[in-house]
Image 1 (cartoon, rainbow, N blue to C red):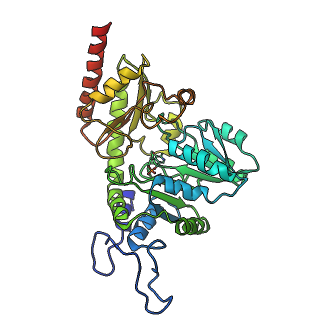
Image 2 (image 1 turned 120 degrees about the vertical axis):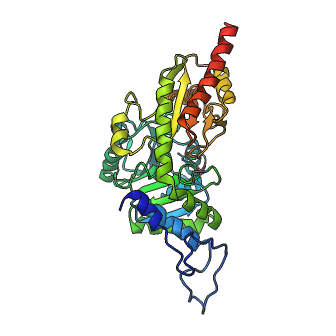
Image 3 (image 1 turned 90 degrees about the horizontal axis):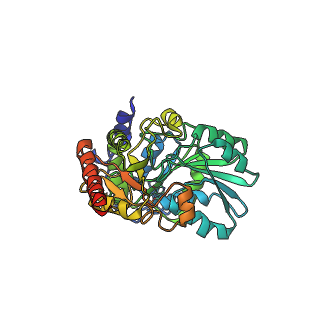
Length: 388
Ligand SMILES: *Cc1c(COP(=O)(O)O)cnc(C)c1O
C-alpha cells in the first residue's frame, strides 16, 4: 500500500456508528460498570478516543511504535526533556527553534540539565561534543529559518555509540517528506501547529517513539504533567493529516519555483532552500527527504532592515505573520519577529541578518505568488532609485 492510501485508511471507521469521520469525544470522564471495571477509558487526561486515533495515526505515519498528542509543540518538547535527570547533558543543533532554546536554557538549566549547541551540519561536530554525560542529542533538519540540513543517519550512529537518545524535531520536513525513525532516531517530535494541521487554525504537538518501552515513559510523563491535546483539536489535526502528502508536495513545488525566481534577482543576496543544488547539504537533503519543503528564506545585498520591512509589508498574498505550514502563504522578518529575543551577534552568526526574510509558501498558484513578490520587490527598487 502506498503512503497516501495508508494514511487515509489507517484512520479507523467508528465501530459504534460507522461514522467515517472520527467522532469527537468531548468528555472528561467515563462511566464504569464497577469500580475499576471500564472499557479502557477512566479519565480524559489519561485517555481520550479521539486523541488516541491521532496518536496511533502519527505513530503509523512516522514508522514508530507509540505516538502522543500534546497541547503544543513546546509541550511535546518539554515531555521529551523530562526523560532526563539532573546532571544529564543535551547536545543540540545550534540553529534550534527559539522556543526550545528558551525551554532548555531558562527552565531546565536551573534543574541541572546542561545544553551544548553545535553546528550539526557537520556530524563530526556532534561526535566531538558528546561526553559520557550526554543523554540526548537534539536535531532539527531543516532548521528554522536558514534551512540547515544535518545527516540524521550519521548522527544516529553517534547517538547509539554513546548510549544517548536521538530526538529529531521533524516539524519543517513533516513525515510526508522525512521519517527520522527510519534513519535511526529514537524519538520524533512535531509542532503539529504547522504542516500536520496545515490550516493555521490550532496549536498542537506530537511525540513519536521507536520502542514501546520509550513510549510508556512518554505516556507516563504525558499523564503526570498533563499537557494533553483537546479532543476537538485532535480531530482537526487528524483532518489535516488526511491531506498532508498532497499539500507537502504542492508546497514544495511552489517553494522550488519561488527559490529559483529569487536567485534571478539582483537585489537578493542569499537564497536558502534545500532544493537548490547550491545549498550546502543539498545532497543529504536529497537522500533523506522526499520533498524539500515549503519554507524559503532569503536576504538582501544591502542588509537593511528598512528595505526588508518594505518588502514584507508590501506583499498582498504573502500575509505578514509568524508561523508556517498553512495553506495560505506567510511572510516574516525574523529579526523583528520570531528571532527578536536572540542577541544580534548570535543571530548574525547563524545567518539571521537584518534583511533576512522567511517565506512560508502556501498553496496559491505559484505564478501569483511570484508576481506578488515581484511587485513588492519592484516597489522597493523604485523607492531606492528615487532616494539615490
Ligand atoms: C513552531 C515550532 C515549534 C513549537 O511549536 P508550538 O506548536 O508553537 O508550541 C517547535 N519546533 C519548530 C521547528 C517549530 O517550527
